[in-house]
Each structure stands twice: as C-alpha cells, then as structure tokens.
Length: 350
Image 1 (cartoon, rainbow, N blue to C red):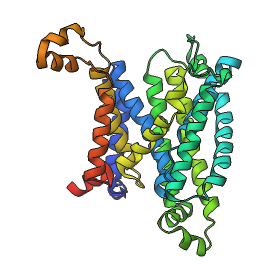
Image 2 (spheres, helix red, strand yellow; image 1 turned 30 degrees about the vertical axis):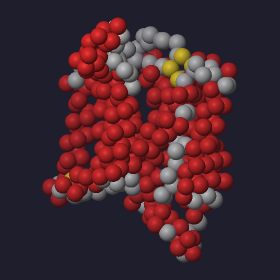
Image 3 (cartoon, rainbow, N blue to C red; image 1 turned 45 degrees about the vertical axis):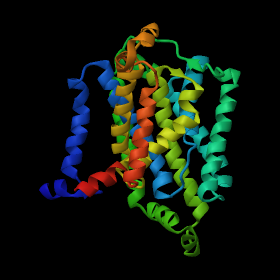
C-alpha cells in the first residue's frame, strides 16, 4: 500500500493526488458561500477544457484556437433541445457528442494537411466564421442567445432530468467529475500506444510517417477525443449558467482562453493545464468581482479630485475590464520568463 501511494504520476505522488482530490471533494462543505464555490467550479471547468485541448495541442503538437466550436456545440445543443423541445440534457448530450464528432471530422480532414502557423490560422478563421454564423442564426437566438426557463424541481430525480438545482453543490460535484474525467482521459491516452504515436507526430511528423504511423488518422482521433471532452464541458456550462450566447461559447476569445490555460500551465503535461486553470481562473474571477464588478464613482468627482480620486476610483472598480489587463500581464510575464509554463517554474524551483 505504501509503495503504491509513493508511486508518482508525472512527478506527483499518488498520496498527494488522493489528498488533493479529497480536498476538492470536501471544499464546498467548508466554503458555503456561492461565490467561492463558483470560483472553483469555473476553475475545474476550464481545467477540464485545458486538459482536453492538451490531447491535441500538447501530445499531437497541433495548436488549435478553434475549440470554442466544440464548447459551443455542447452548450447550444443542450440549450436549444431544452427550450424548443423540453429535452433533458441527459437526452441531448449524445446528440451533442455526435455533432461534435461530425464537426471534428469535417474540420480535421482538410486542416490537418496544413502545418505550423497555417494550421493555427485555419483554426482561427474557422472559429471566427462559426461565430459570425451563430450570431446571425435567428433559430439559435442570434447575438442575444438562448435563455433557459428557470425550473423549480420537486425532487432529486426531477432536478436531474431538468439539469437545474437550487444551489451550487450539485454543480460543483458535476464539475469535479468532469475535471477528473478529463485528467483520466488524458493520462490513459498519454500512456497508450496511441499517445506514443501522437508524441512521435509532434516531435517529427515526417519521421513518424516514414515509420508507418498514419499521421492524418491519429491526428483526427486526437481531435475527436479532445472535442468530446470539450463538448461535455459546454453542456455542463449551459446547465450551470442557464444562458448561452455566442460571445461566451463559440467566440475566438473562448478558444484562446482554453488554449492559454494549457500553454501557461505547461503544454504537453498532465498537471500543467489543471495548474494553469487554478492560477488563472481564480485570479481573473477575483479581479472581476473586486475591480471590474463594482460601480464606478461619480465622474464629476474625478475632475477636481486629483490623483487620489483616481486611485480611489480604480480601487472601487472604476474603469472596467481591469481583470483583462492583469490577465494579459500574467500571460506576458509567463511567456517571457518561463516558456514552459507555471509547471516549469515550479519544477525549476524544485
């Protein structure tokens, strides 16, 4: 038993993993305030998407900024099926997975013929095209999006069927399950023969092809697996916020956030995206709540108040979007001083 607990999974002892998972499981019992639960829920959600992105971007070396599409497929399928037909997310989820698989094949087959920055540019153009399409699609609510009708469940089974709960605790454990599923999926692929083929493609595609690796097929498999987990995250997001709009699902910004989580945490590693999510998401959520989320002071006070009035203005949340500026600063600092990401920084300290 001790030997098993001392065993390391990418440098982290199993005992430490068990403690961390137990801490996450017990956290909402201690942190009962909705905001603090929300911060960890969003961290686990983006952590799951970062890990999913890492299957394609980290193992296979295909840096994609189009994963917002698969996130949006999960969110919009769940929202549209529920509001238009009254279908439970339990029923619409297989439909969303089927759509994301089809989209993966349609996008992957032509774009995987491209390499390097051409592939990145193709993913950006496709993502932006999808955003414009959805924003002008009246059946999907256009730029306004789809708002869920709030449903008051009469029991646990009723709440599960409608995917709506009176508090954040069930959402928290659903996000935890999704986070662990993403980590488990990545680890299983990483240790498999399939994962070795992906690493070979990442390191030297031509050499892998000359040795008999079907490069296009394995890239496509990686995209399908990555898209499936991201679609699950989109379905969860729709049920969690009860509102779906293009800018928060199928936009290029969402795709960039998913990719940056993995890149800043440590691309190609198991724990990097998870670490990146738990650093970036709480930072931005706290900044948004305590800086950008508050009412600004009366602008008339600033004209005659001098520098101290301006300092007070920003301290109380004036100016808006300060969280985005700090987020960008964190990205620049990590990219400049530690290209291997936050995980690489911790390893260097160790």
